[in-house]
Figure 1 (tube, helix red, strand yellow):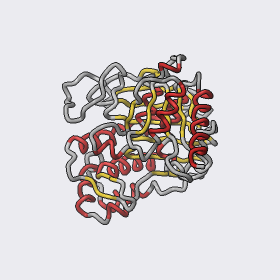
Figure 2 (spheres, rainbow, N blue to C red; figure 1 turned 90 degrees about the vertical axis):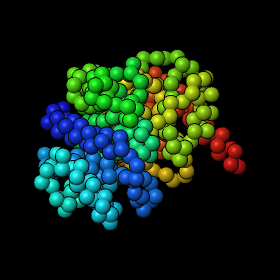
Figure 3 (cartoon, rainbow, N blue to C red; figure 1 turned 45 degrees about the vertical axis):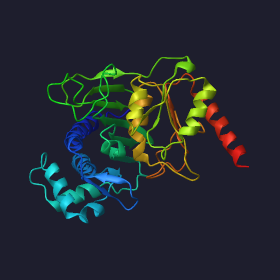
Figure 4 (cartoon, one colour; figure 1 turned 180 degrees about the vertical axis):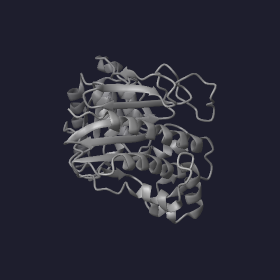
Length: 346
């Protein structure tokens, strides 16, 4: 098995730097959001995060393909925002120019269907970011036909599951280690999954999925946005399984981190419309972390997520992530719900 120690070192440092920039922006969110052509919100933090991470990955591994969500075209149309992003990035690259910034961002326009590539979501859960709630910086490496490395920087999700979720308006440098900084969840294929505080003040510790086997007591995660997953279907599936607890709704791949660290046993992302396909950057890092923590991730048909198809998971439909013991039972409940949906449409 290949040794990915160097790749992990570069990835962890880059995500930590990006998280520092994102947290500084989130604390003072006001009118910093602009709209992409698809009307989804994007902030100056998205672009700064992508620039810092892709500069680091591109410099260290110039032959690797890079696949990321954002493109500089939107930013170049807004000179004021370009200046704001450049100011952020200069914290780590004092001599950076606007042209260099845009070039770093646009390194992420790779196709993805190559033997080795990195995929990045610079801020996964942008709406959560704008609400000052959960978001994640998600970076993963695909090599030799499979995911081999995943890093999730979750600034508002503590490394210690015993601590409450972080309110970015209340954090300060005086808060306990692991709280103010949030969690850095990461994994390398065959080496396990770990968490550390984003500020680097706590040593990494292994994480694993919940060992719970009583389905009725399972905790379920789902997207906060109804447009991202069917809340009604998830509720029906939970009822059929005998799960009575309220679902934990949050944005981003922080949900993957919750399952990987034993905070929840199930994450459902059910298709909201026919023909919808997921983007690889929305899942790659989270899948890697859950699998190395001992959990299971498939699509709603029980098929492994296929990251070899390019920028989208065109061979898959939806996502089901669990702690493992009753994955097939949960898939059966999802299938039964889909049959009910079809019958109801006839």
